[in-house]
Length: 164
Image (cartoon, rainbow, N blue to C red; front, side, top):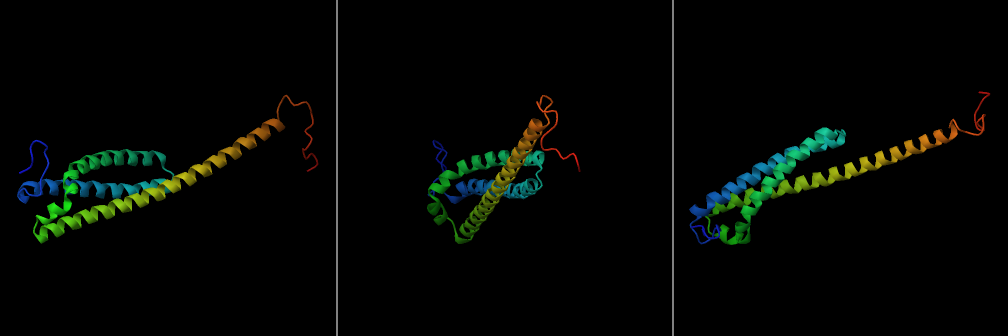
């Protein structure tokens, strides 16, 4: 039985008591990471096409999913603390299925993290390009303003080609 004082499962409890809880948590993790991976693909497209508004919507949805995933991960902690003991309490088919589900979730999380890092690099490069472009525009405007300023002392600009 689950320790009601701490609401913590024990590997020595009957697996029928704690296995549905563990299975439910892993189902939540599986669903949230699957949706996060789909949003990661959408995010990549928005980053590549510089679609800021759509990217912000995806990031907002991802934030909601991440909060839910973190909440279920918190509920998973008692199982992870004694994972081997819990797995040893299960027959091989059930143990193998759980281990495979956890492996699939971890692989999905790794793919999401890799894609996020790639997107971060792309966004940084886009920001740097835009910064350089804006700096160039600022310099050009400054030069134009200095050259063609109405308060200029010289009525005839010095470097103007008047002959064609």
